[in-house]
Amino acid sequence: SSSHYLERQKKRESNARSYPRRLPLTLVKSNGVYLQDSENQIFIDGLAAAGTLALGHNHPDITAAITKTLNSGMPLQTLDITTPVKERFIDSLFQLLPSNMSQNARVQFCSPCGADAVEAAIKLAKTVTGRNTILAFSGAYHGMTQGTLAIMGNLGPKSALGTTVPDVQFMPYPYAPRCPYGIGKDGVKASLNQLETMLTDPESGVQKPAAIILEAVQGEAGAIPADNEWLKGLRALTKKHDILLIIDEVQAGMGRTGEIFAFQHANIEPDIIVLSKAIGGGLPMAVIVYQGELDQWQPGAHAGTFRGNQLALASGQVVMRHLLEENLHHHAGKIGARLKAHLQNISSAIVGDVRGRGLMLGVEIVNPLSDKDSLGNHQVDGDQARAIQQEALKRGLILELGGRFGSTVRFLPPLIINEDEIDVIAERFSEAVH
Ligand code: PMP
Image 1: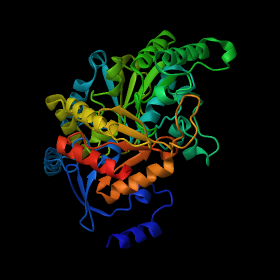
Image 2 (image 1 turned 30 degrees about the vertical axis):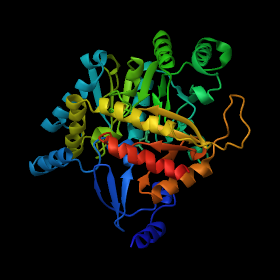
Image 3 (image 1 turned 45 degrees about the horizontal axis):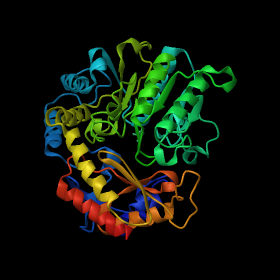
Image 4 (image 1 turned 120 degrees about the vertical axis):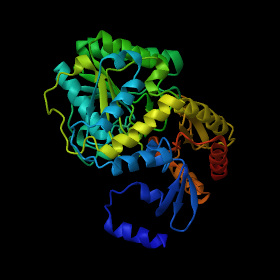
């Protein structure tokens, strides 16, 4: 039975295990947006392996691509030596890129997780600029290696470690409800002014950074979208001061927010794009893509044994094909708007901010009896959010939490989800809230 497996897991796996604590499942089957556990309960998957499964579980096109590659007799593990499968993956990747970058892009294959690709982006930026520091934002999540923990805008996961590596400075990530710079246009302006002062005034005590790194929609921080004007301002400032702009699209990229890359909502292009999760079609894959002029590092500057697994290249290319040929991102935008409207219609005093883009949405849970802060927001309520997550699970809906004290219920379903399934998610969530 499921409890047998869970007992064994508790005894044999690390205390650092994370998801099974709040999603105590033993999974045996999956298809599309559905998961089945060992007790034959069916769940709608509103987590999709943290946004990885753009095409859902066991999509037939992905299964076919993997099977074909597997049966072709080609070597499956080639370090970063090229193959026709890899060639096709790069062709599709470059076709997805925004216009300026696609003319002269370079791709670096990384050890297959988001954190390693972020490490590569930071190393490249330091190499190119000869500078040391990185500027990151409050709430930022970029991975769990020590370098990426250093740029995490959340003390919790790194407080036990003392020092972590890169030199890093932080700024608040402006977002209307909780941005200390204030709400709307004025907040955006104040944030950009503060940044420019930091960069130009010697009395700020701040070193000019090699790069600014951010998520265009913050994921783990609770589906927080950046203001488009702020992104444009950041792009202009980084150009003006010769600082590289790294956008971490590990979670928001590959169509999830309604554009292929989340920074495209603001019509900007970064210097370096970080990609993982969905770009492997459910198999492990991570890359950085950057402008050709930046390709100034030495051979072997970012090596790693498991770069370019052929099955992952084949399955990842299927996701890119669905984006290129079927505009899967448009579907994500449309169906995400439907879900957001449902969530906004839930009338309950504990539902605070409803936010996000496309199929990267969050509902902040608040304590309506708490005092309001200076910006007029009630205190967030992580305990209540956890209770809602458990209620949703009982109703056959898998959701993840994020944000301050885990107070944001997050929605990251597969991008292929249909209207009926979206309506069921909203209905079950609403029941869980009430
Ligand atoms: N960047 C972002 C924006 C992420 O959401 C994540 C994972 N949640 C990472 C980086 C790290 O990816 P990984 O867990 O594959 O190392």
